[in-house]
Length: 62
Image 1 (cartoon, one colour):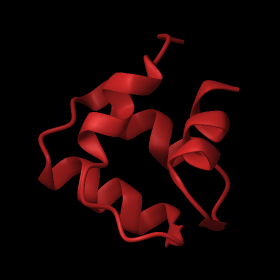
Image 2 (cartoon, rainbow, N blue to C red; image 1 turned 90 degrees about the vertical axis):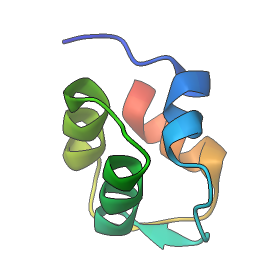
Image 3 (tube, rainbow, N blue to C red; image 1 turned 120 degrees about the vertical axis):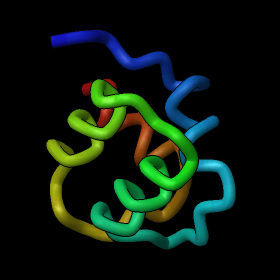
Image 4 (cartoon, one colour; image 1 turned 90 degrees about the horizontal axis):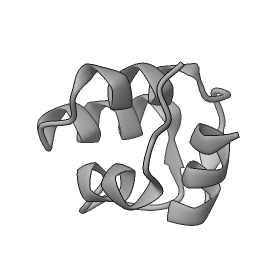
């Protein structure tokens, strides 16, 4: 599994309105031009509300 750089991840989540659900984050990342690796990792995080960028980064990186 490819490692995701948290700074790069947040680039694709620019404009997110937190708290945000997983599917909203995937859609936003796709709209912001995220590649397949980022989109796949976002799709794998638990389906819940994320309170901010750090919560998303923790879920994706771990």
